[in-house]
Length: 175
Image (cartoon, rainbow, N blue to C red; front, side, top):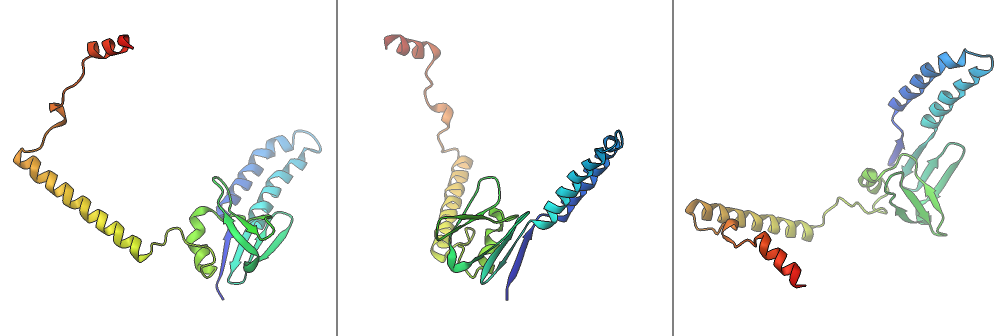
């Protein structure tokens, strides 16, 4: 059974340690300020807890306080978010945020889901042949231009007439 887990990188825990170090001078100024240590602990819990597990049968999105399980037949679409985590759209049009899953993860998501999520980087054979033909044609044009330049038979852009500033001003005044 294929299983893929998307999580926030463990190096993000370094930020929690840095926050704890930065809070220390303030936390010991007055009694009760030691409660500030809750901030780095909460952040560390958030980093460790948020994850998405994808299998061939289901998606399990684990957030800070809740876990949501969605079976693949219930998924209508995957919504792409410009800056953020992807969202699974269910049949009833409710959305489930997929923690730590971004656009760049779509090929892996497609592979594990058994093709239920289309891979945007996959190229079918017809498209690949068309792209190859365009590339070949572009290379032929470039080679022909290089030969013409070597022979001195191409027309330079500088040979075209250029309007002077006076003629442009006269056209504007006629309007």
